Length: 445
Ligand SMILES: *Cc1c(COP(=O)(O)O)cnc(C)c1O
Image (cartoon, rainbow, N blue to C red; front, top):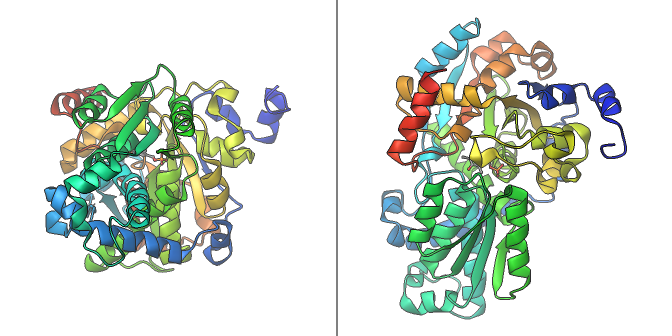
């Protein structure tokens, strides 16, 4: 029995589960989505909350610019660019025997400063929020002060009285660990078995305590939670439920809007924007999608991408069980080379809050991630880690699903004007030797 029903009964009521269990690539466009004006109320957070997160990141910008000089040119804002992928688009469409239409773009979060992945958004925002709360409370800073003052021995000694703990498959640990250690916190990162060695080495070199587990992400998170519970001076960053992570990610949307405007890319009912977001526990893609829906409303269509071995969000939303179900419950192993996406149980907060705002979900086999990694490197010169390629097939999944296109009113005239944005979630910090092995593996496929 699985959650009160036999497997046969589950497969009869939800035939898609058969594909998931067989590890076949599959796509599901949720017929229950609702207009943004209605469904945004499900989230329990609003534009004001995102504006506060954005303002916080601006308050800290002088500090960030000072301690991470690579951000100085951007005034201490941690942001990435966008770039078109014309060669990749042509190859993908020809390969799929689809006509040319719209424009394929990449959001280069792989190049985000400090930690080289999308986690530099949510993870760093949450650490800064905690640091600001403590510092204001203790009178270390006052509202309106220049936060660059936090780069001092006094501030580091103050934060050194406190701990920050997190469970991670790698990239969140990198973001939280580097930022926390820089401020002076005692940082502990509980790493799942999927985490790459170089990520652990890098953290230890920054003075972060790395605790390694043989088990998966959910177990690492549990250990982090337990450590923080036993120590009142230790703050736990809850990747499964944190609104502050979520809001940090959501700030990406207002910045993307500016970038699209500057690039002359229109987004409205006749110029739809499709965004393909790799999904692990869901906080990153959920937060970004929330920000995008607040700004672009029904003109933006967000689609989540997961490995065939870890389709936790698809399973949770499709069955309505959310965080009550794990892929392991259905015999799916949660073993994938896409380490950022190796999550067996989705965030219940994101799954419930965002289910009427996310157009669809699809799965990709690992081999395809590597093949696309090598192709994107050869054709466009971009350096992405395997997880970050999950969004790349999204355009094809959308263009192939006539029912979905009809439902959202995506006529061929509108599709001709469409922008397809692949969120490139990580990769610039992958060591060269490791990246060369990824490319080699992808070239052989
Ligand atoms: C963490 C991560 C994701 C997904 O973010 P979640 O918040 O876990 O859903 C996607 N890509 C990369 C590279 C990541 O590190």
